[in-house]
Every structure is written in structure tokens, then in C-alpha cells.
Length: 205
Image (cartoon, rainbow, N blue to C red; front, side):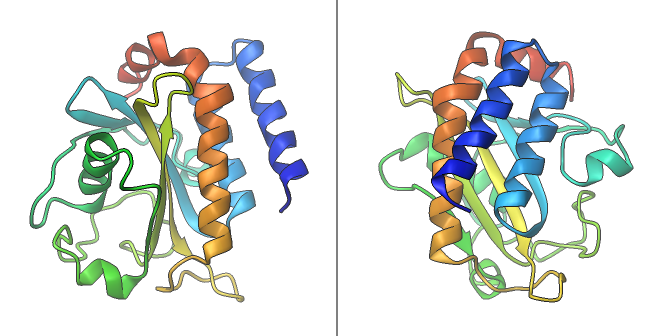
């Protein structure tokens, strides 16, 4: 996937924004394009709410959004510490240490050895094949002017050559590609909605 492909995705997403697509459809498309860029089992985008929370809107996790579009959203408190879970941990790091964390790229071995690990409980309803996170690639989305952390995009469970989830980390090229995609989203897509993004997404939880 080259820069031209990424620019074409950006133009397609901006077209949705420019034509007042509803937020749920926009987030579904963002996640679907991410999986086209980086083969993985699932993609979710999490929107920051206030100073402390991060939200996934209902019916936006790809590909589950097309199988069960009414699957509810979720609000998670951004925090750090033993057993808090990786969504809470990564959001906290992105919000608190903007210069330290550009991306998280974690294999299953790295997940289970991390203090945020919750024990691999099969609690995530968004996976189609797996019952838990086997690998995670996650990048922050920041406002193009203020550099504020406004969201994050997370792909989970890298696919092996046969199309099954593996516990391997994502490649450096895939990590760099997700960073560029997140920058595009911050610069050209979500930053255009920032002033009402939080209120819109709260209606979708």
C-alpha cells in the first residue's frame, strides 16, 4: 500500500465528511479502510470524551458492524496500573505523554508480560474468530493544530498468510502505515468534527 493509496482513502473519507455522512457511517468506513491497509481480525476507533474517558460508538467495530450493527458501544476510563486493560492503558499514555508514545505494537508474548494485561478473558465482543487480543497495533489521532489527543485507532490480531489470527506483532512497515493513517485522520477528517465529535459519539454508546 503506497502513499497514493493512502491519499485516495483520505479523499474518500473527506467526501463523506463534506457530504454530512452520519458519524456512525464515517467511523465504520475509517475502520474498514484500516483493515484494507493492514490485514487484521478487527479494527476499532475510540473517541476521547472529556479528560478521563474514551468511547467506542455502537455498531462501528469492523467487521462486526455489518454482522451485528446494534452491538452496543462502551465507555472506558483512561488509566494506568496493573490489570487495567490495554485500551485504558494506551489511551492514558497517548493523552499523558504525547511525545513518548507514537504507536503501540504488541505481540501476544508482549501482551501477557505487560502490567496492563487482564488475564486474556474472552470479554471482547468484536472478534469474529478469536476470543481475546492476540496482538495489538494502536496509534493516536491528534488535532492538527493543538496536537491534542482526540481519538485512537486500534487494529488487533494480525492475520497469518492463511487468514487466521496470530500472536505475532505487526511489521514495522505496518506500524508506520497506521501512524500515517492516524495522522491523516487527525489532519483532514476527525479534526473537522472535533467541536461536536464528543457530543455526537456519546449518542452512539
